Image 1: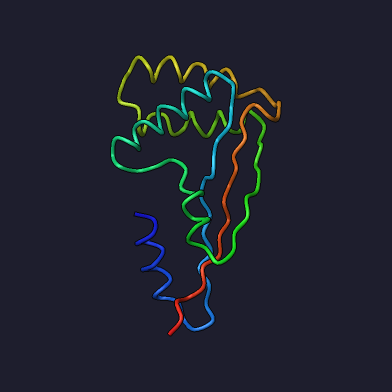
Image 2: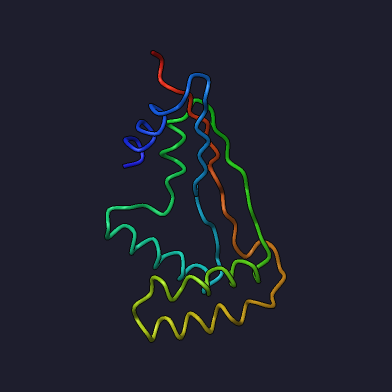
Length: 128
């Protein structure tokens, strides 16, 4: 419940304090391994009532916000995804197949195979 969490955090701010938040607005990719990874993580989160991208929700809760873009080399995204794969993927066949596909990308220095849009938001304390 992002709205409730932000309200609780903002209520604890000292006078003049600010809450700075950053979360995923979107993840864009046409690469099959990255797309499968993102889709599987998103599906798992949705089954738990959560969302992969809460940035759009933050935009409506913030006093000010902006979206920034991060487009790392494919090798960096693949390494991060590969490290996390074992922590959420219980299916051994998927873990093995997707793991191999991500490992194959770890030497790929192309930029633009995956792009994150990140919402950066500022929340002021509630008026007294």
